[in-house]
Length: 186
Image 1 (cartoon, rainbow, N blue to C red):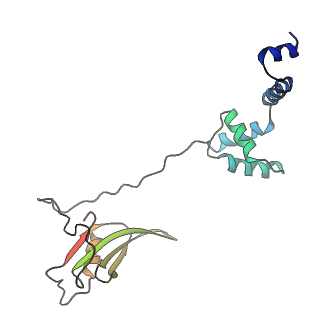
Image 2 (image 1 turned 180 degrees about the horizontal axis):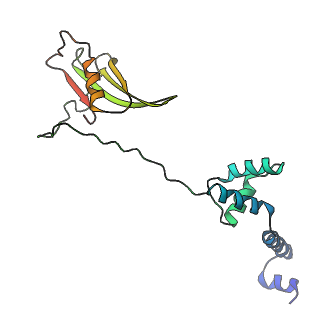
Image 3 (image 1 turned 45 degrees about the vertical axis):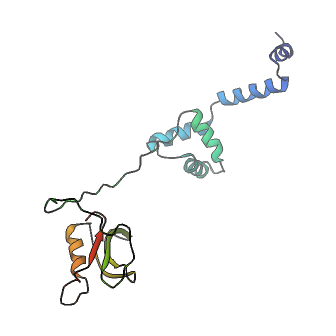
């Protein structure tokens, strides 16, 4: 059947037929980039994404390679990078003595204070430093929103929390009788 007849029968233009045929012929050709991508992905355990791969191939071949072309070739030949799941850090808190009764939220989200050292809040946070991570434990007064005690450590432990509590500036080592210390998980 002639191409003109087939195109009119299918309801497409002849130029569309030739354009699609040209794309199919190009896709069937062996692209040297595909072999380079395949070798690199196998060597790097499928860790490179399309943009990183395009930068590497541009340096390797000495001319610019568009990342969109790399995306198309990787998708067409099944050479996409593997997505690693994000690691989650789990913390386990241990109490020295089991609590007999449930812990109640005494503050009930009322973070205003009528006097100094009556309502205190405490928390620990991880701070990145050049050597790794440092845990910062702080105690804040809700009356004037100032940090009154802080301590650093290598890990979030009960000893770090107690060391922070011992640094509280109090008269004769005692806190006021109406003082409330609020923490998220003790």
